View 1: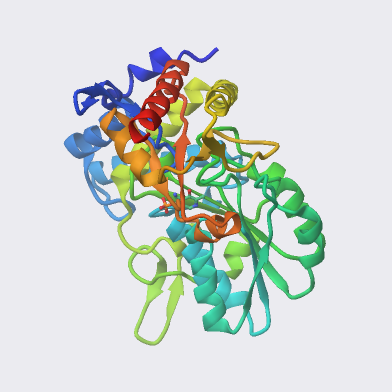
View 2: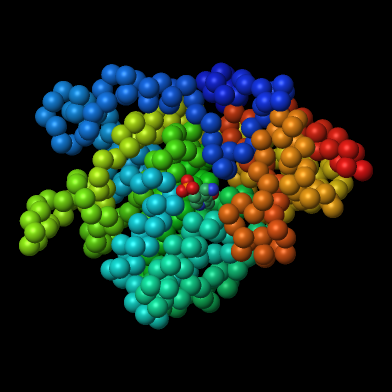
Length: 405
Ligand code: PMP
């Protein structure tokens, strides 16, 4: 069984205080904290082998290249991709989605085609498709959800037709915690001949992901939401698709031969990796995944499920709290509304009591529109959170409400 107190000792920031109170960090869906192992891996890189990669014959360059490519190999294993060249480094989930929109869009999207997203999506899995649709004269089609926060699968089935050239859905909703049945979504899309991109930003830190088992065509996530550094992300793509797609950006690294008449492109994955990558961050991400592997994602899932059940129970005991959505499968994200108190006002008071929560629309305005609200308070969990922290939050919410009265 996972020991959160042992894990907490690896996360220096969790020891700090804010406003003279112990920090309770419940904003893990926005970004996660970093263990010492990640911070030290980055520091070690800059202190002992900082160098540009793939280009030099010298010792440091080879060492840095090795570490960078080791990270790619670990990510392949982590996602159970078939090949390391199916792992492309990006700046984050947002850039990974924009890469697909630009490159896949250029190769495969024509006027009248349809891109399908769900009502649950983060803005970064909506706006790149809107830009693409505008550019190509294509259409954005939306799979609706119910008030539990579940995708309406029957409607999805009906919306799939021969015009649908790509389905882009989140694996886990960052606002409601819904775990989307991506396997079934992909199966149905494939029967229709449509590839699927899965936004894994809120999934990978919380349970094991197997891109081959789910048969995703594209899968992406951000390093900073999985205990790794900011500025690094991953796009997984099936070789067949990546081979057929044009480069995303031009520059060094992505080329094979350059002349003013004609340039040929490098092989995968480098075709999609123009310029110097953020080597320190791939190394930091490698350390983060090593840390998770050691902890065990099944253990993480089981422990976070206990935390989630406890959080839902504590919140449901407070009469004026309304929890948004009740998905069948939920990851450790809960959105709630505090009666007639404005979420921002309650968030501000809770902040002064040491609680880091998120208030607002969570970059999911269409989802907020579905519920006819402006925003919520969101608590999002990670494996270093504890039952005691949840009890303290519940107590603080009660106290805050009394203050407002
Ligand atoms: N998708 C989802 C579901 C997210 O939660 C987020 C971040 N909140 C993103 C995409 C965007 O990730 P990033 O800002 O790291 O690119």
